[in-house]
Length: 102
Length: 174
Image (tube, rainbow over all chains, first blue to last red; front, side, top):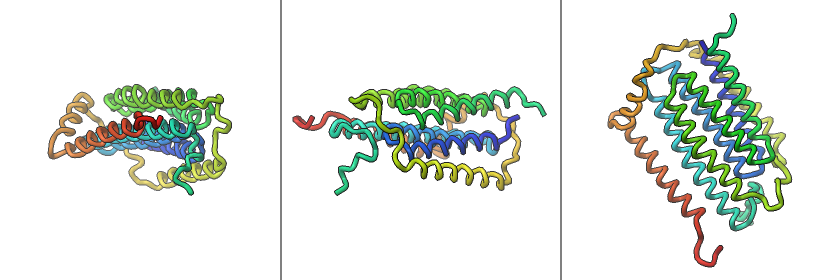
């Protein structure tokens, strides 16, 4: 039998890797990939807690499905922003997108 | 105590997941990073299967790999730098980023060590009725119909917003 702590440690590691990607990457699309990793870490936590703590309720799985929907919406709008900026300025590096700075 | 078969599968799956996730955040070539992202998502769906959430594992493959990862690859190809690969993978704050990520990881692990519910054993669950219960609870008013409606409105708004933001601009603006 797999202890609950193993899932939580894997999830914490995945979250930290995604956080590093969000903070350190230069390309805007790579930052979005880091956000995907963090959302997936959350999903592992939700499903693990559902399985180990409240398997008689379905709340954990429903919440994981909500996270799926939010992730799909987030990545669609994020990539649309990246493509829009690229069409106007030909850049994808997040630290060069500074049109609102003056 | 020798590890059981489930534990071996878990260890292999999570090791592949974490190594692929490290490759996602460190590869300079973004197409390679997106392919490693697909490998990471497959590893997570293996973890879902081990947790007896088979429906979520299928949704993970269909939604994340079939839609999100492919959308990422499309965006990478559309915004490819004309001069080839990028000059730098990381911005100048990557040392601080490593520090913050390690701090978050150690903080989470320390917090987990002091948590009393950590030693709960797995309980028996009737997996044959899980999908039925899931579908019913998402569409009954006593349970989760409001979050379902909000999620669908959010998806519609994201669809329209993505078309408006990335679609063709006014005439002559291109």
